[in-house]
Length: 390
Length: 128
View 1 (cartoon, each protein chain N blue to C red):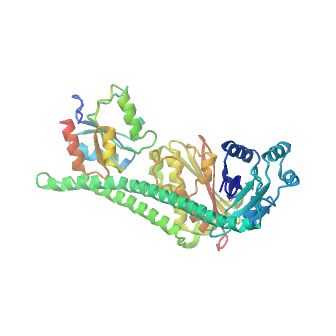
View 2 (tube, helix red, strand yellow):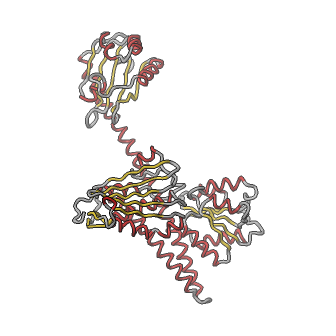
View 3 (tube, rainbow over the protein chains, first blue to last red):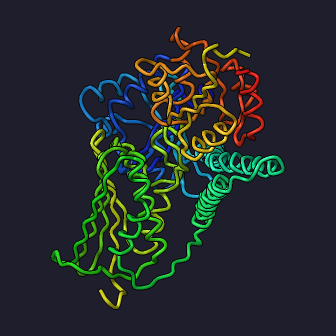
């Protein structure tokens, strides 16, 4: 485009709440640097009523056959900006939208300056065609990038999932080999029944672990397809929490964590906290929260608080573990959002994403507050509407 | 393959963050007359090898992906310590690329899930 159709050419694209210049061209590299410098110093106003922002919004080209001084005065942010713009000797400009398959994704700004040419109506159609070609190219590049990162994410997930599956498989393999050895030696030595029994129990436990892992993987694909089925019934939240806490007794002891559970109904009253929820899914949520608290807060106390108003019920799990930085808290509930390296903490990196899906499916919301080095509080707030007993 | 220290007395150090794997190896290798000591990560293993314990195993069976200190980090620390560098390492990991990993550790690499006979075979060669 430069220098046949313009002295200056700039490509701006729309991002979530802003417009970003992604490329600037001029025969003179020093001028390109100047343009970048101006871009850094004077942030583009995404709501501007003229220029590339307006072209991106409306999809209609803007032709400035002449750039008179009053236009520069109107565009300039301050005296220095105005001086710089005047010094560039801009004399004519054409801004066309970059259009792909949908609404405009950006704008192409062409400027004649030192070569003293002018844009006319005839140039508009030609450049709009260029804008369409560039728009498609840009959109394809973006889609390609998104596909690439989705594939990367999937590959990473498969490698983490296979590692997680191989762990119970390894102890299963070893225990079965151990049983085969006992059986093979049966001719020469009496079978040690106690040893055999212990190994079979070990096999049983590893099969349980494998089943849970496979279920979790299936949950992920169901959730991804939006096919989570809920079985709503009247559930006492306090009772579900107590049962989960009881089940974790051995894990808590092994990790050196003490656990306290505090349950309080509306106004601090005792008694059950009923709501219309899916009991198994609630258990899954609490299991997830609790195993995270043990994993990241080993050796420190953990507290679960369950409290309710007339309309909502809330579970909070507080650990005193490694904590989560503000930036990581933002993406904690995303799919595959593992904020610590898999090298150091195992797991699928899907737990909290599933928790969020489950709680939202029951009409609630999840949250986290945390300080690095001091611990985290995870919470789930659920509506109590629909329950006969609420 | 490196040889085990002469006075190691069939002692094996198992380093793995998974309790069921530690327990299975301790049980099964114990059956074959090995004395098994376990650690849940690299840092725990180092503290067993250094004073006051100064454990001197014939072999260290080492997992790679572990919390606190992983297998690679442990291996580097071990190689830096002249008192420990000679102890043979056998990596047992679910990490896929076997050939690459074996060359990085200059020793045996066993892929999970591993068979008991394979572990016994390797230990037999190093310890006897």
